[in-house]
Length: 90
Image (cartoon, rainbow, N blue to C red; front, side, top):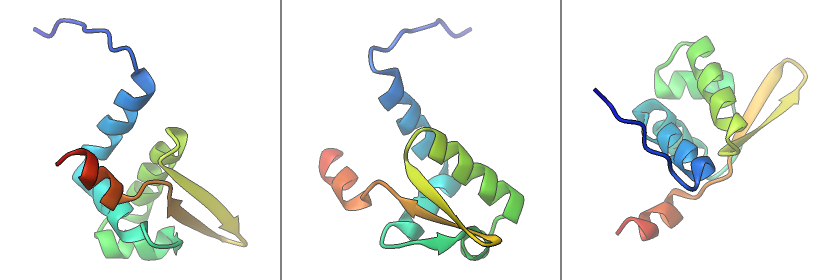
């Protein structure tokens, strides 16, 4: 049984939870240095397009990445720098 523990910074906790999914973390590693279409990103991460799109939407909701629509394509860009996270967790 889990007991409920209240955290003070729920927003940060939510972002860290999002990053704990290996596929989501890999998405951020791939798009860290620039924009990429969700279609290409899904292929690179080896995910179905719908799953990749859902993951990107979930991360957009907590402000981890940004989405930009150009015609029929949706491009995503990370708002985090993995290198900066590495410094924090060393």
